[in-house]
Image 1 (tube, each protein chain N blue to C red):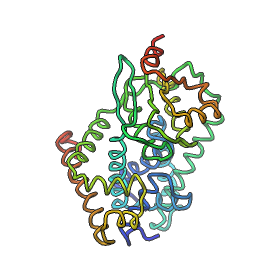
Image 2: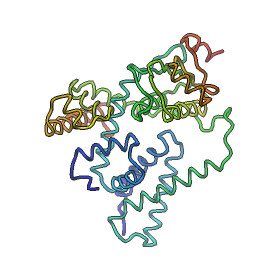
Image 3: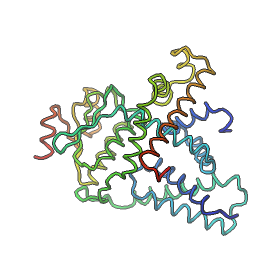
Length: 170
Length: 168
């Protein structure tokens, strides 16, 4: 089984996301973890340990979980650092992160209050469909349409904002 | 689970994943899936941005001298991942290392919220910075005392005093 560089780059992006999810985006070793995961994955491919293409996701995810657990174990084994000394140099925020945040804020500002309210109820307040329908008077199908349209509108405006801010990135 | 069968179910799953509400096996299954599914990964990232944006609007940041004061613009409970993420991001995007978190609008905090404060504190210390708390409610203050977090995180009830303490 072989993978083109684009597929591997896609895996790298997703593994980075997964590692940040478990370790926090401020973890300075995320890229090392992703690199180690990919190295083990490629090595397993070379040794023909992966036979079923459908199990690649679970296989890759399992390797990443192992690398994360090893990382945690290593951190626990190591002596705690002197809190008076900075463990890692201060990392200023990437300008992309600030731009991203501005684009998201601008996208939300352009959306209607009704859309924002619906999205807030579903995503932040964790209300279920029935609860929101009861409160807003929407039917099941109206709720689905409203939710996905609102999310789509957000995605569209946010992409436009990102294009405007960083034409090279999108 | 068939992730593409019902978009609403998938959206709920993504929301619960982002809020860390899924159990271990559901988390593993979803991660195994999105690693090979661009569509679900794209939905996940869009929902994360959306949830981040919705929660950021609840976090205000302002500067007093060289201290950044982070506060919630509406009452919150520090028990939800989304709000915590907003606060964490607010802090982590700072170049500044003197940060005061105003807890006056935090009505309730649980172990996850306390853990988040400790994470913020660790982040500040790692970056040679300082993190202090302002105006916790009686309930929050009680929990800070029981868990001895108040011995690590200095707490103030007067903003000017708190700001002055960073430079004393």
